[in-house]
Length: 492
Image (cartoon, rainbow, N blue to C red; front, side, top):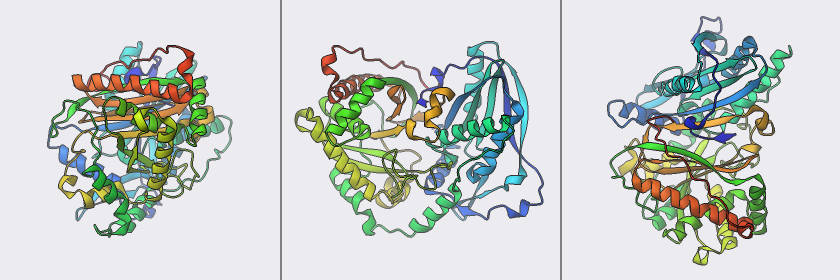
């Protein structure tokens, strides 16, 4: 699964069919879930949307996945597969309501949900199709139900299925779950079999339990010691991106969405071998390489950043590929965000030492990953908690190995792509990901001349460092791919 801007997606033209959620009266309507507390992530996201509804900041965002179904489409089977997805996952049926200041949610009964199909029309060119889909995906509204949309571009020899979600109901790792479930269900239904799917816990249960456990947390709780130590060394709650992007701290800019390959599959395998020789993994090697690239470019000798941590693994977070728990096949926002700090090797060239330090720092992070980021922010930096965005450009690093996600071995056949979109921001974010084709990065950064220059220079240095770790320096000059420049306000 590649994570790319939607502007880079290549979807052949065809006839667009969309499916909308509708509710119907059911004898089981009285069995709707009782109101539960939304998760900390959901509450902060929802309140930010409420606050900016009356401003021009425009913090709208969405997560979209597309994938392929080969052969003439059985629309009835696809509709049944989509309906099964919605009925299986409570978070896709939930409605939000703010009561006494707290955000609560409840899920409509599975039997009360039906789908309504609409043939939107035929699109003769890829450009016209892209324009339509781009506008459609940007229509998602955090404050309106439903919180996702779905459809397919149908052709004689196959179809491209798409689903677009507001972040409040999902995260990036939910997208492989979506693809795997629909492809698996569709294959079974077209063969007149009952779909056999793994059990999936409810994110509403997860979020409500999280709120119950941590709402009473106080500033002097020992469980915040990890955060407090980081803040002391960092000089504040948020680790600042170490280079000037030309953005005033109280202003949001249109974002540039760019994606490009870093290493092909053989060189990524070589990187893995080089990392293992230092006691690390591809994840810790890329993290160490990012720190080294920043240091060589004039950044500090101690890397400080924020990492999104999956809460789908035992221990409340962990490196992708860790021990799965009941949330592995669930849809929801199972992400905590944690700080990390480690020193770069002497001279910025001692890769084995930097990888070892990154690995040690990440192990310490994992042992303290239970405290929700939003709660820590509220308690330890209350002066900025009222903001609906991070206060300044933050050093942000994310890594996923999509080969290890549900359905990962089938990705070359299904050709899934993930599209993250945000309208505006004030910094730069990097999402590194590994697929069967190698190592890639998707970046969103402010559309300023300084941000373009810095992101290009850091990218070039990062590729050099990765090649050094993989032992590829002796292979001769390597052409470093440069990302295209296209703002999300045009086509993203």
